[in-house]
Length: 300
Image (cartoon, rainbow, N blue to C red; front, side, top):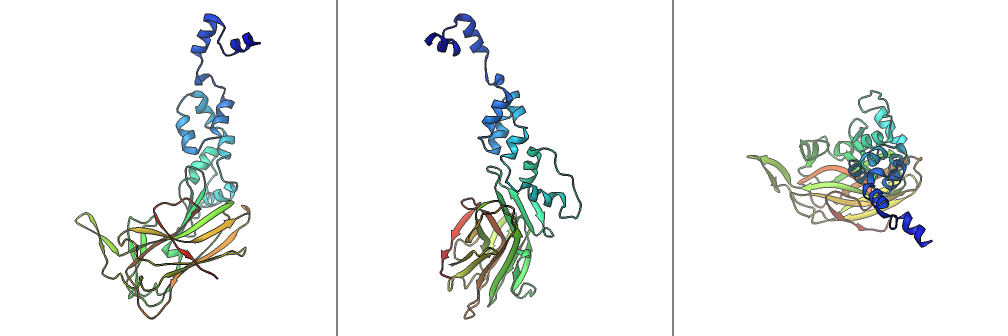
């Protein structure tokens, strides 16, 4: 038996076995075996390994490999691609790899004010909503608010508050999220930024009032989840900050969830101003891009 095992692993077969072992390599791995390896990797790792040899290159294009990386409701997500934001209908990509690649790029909807995408590593859904998608108190009065074009926003525009007594912004989204726990953030910036001689400059002239009372965040979902929290806005003027409003859980991928959320500071004993509002960011819990300030939970 020992001889048989030695022969199986090329340990006792003489010069012929040694030559066969030396000639064997990853390129001789059956494509199905290579695919089983790829199933255990993340999307960027699959793409890197696909360049290794023909076996991995062929396996990296297999539909069952990429379908395992796609969210379970990818057909729903692709419906936003097929009926695009411009009203034109498009043909769905034929292969699952192409579907994954398309969903990894931002998909705009609701008039271009909202977008979602798959984060490339795990294939989880992230979403952003422009400040223009929110209902903001006094937004049409230029004494209080103005929209500023900028390359620092994925929507190329932010809402800047000069001064106001009653600060409140409310948003909602009706969407089929994949199963999981999600966090919702408001991406804001204290101070007004602009370019001077090619350099970014931040003016804090109008920044006031945010250290007197905390801002309150609320989240509610159509299946009965509620969250209430608060936080002061006094972190690093000149830097974009993600203020966490709260979390919510999705348990049914094929059921649309209506999500309502708000950010408010309505104590009218003082004015507040000097705030840039870029967007609302929704992502799987634990995944975020940028500096995060976690708000303090409150009792409802």
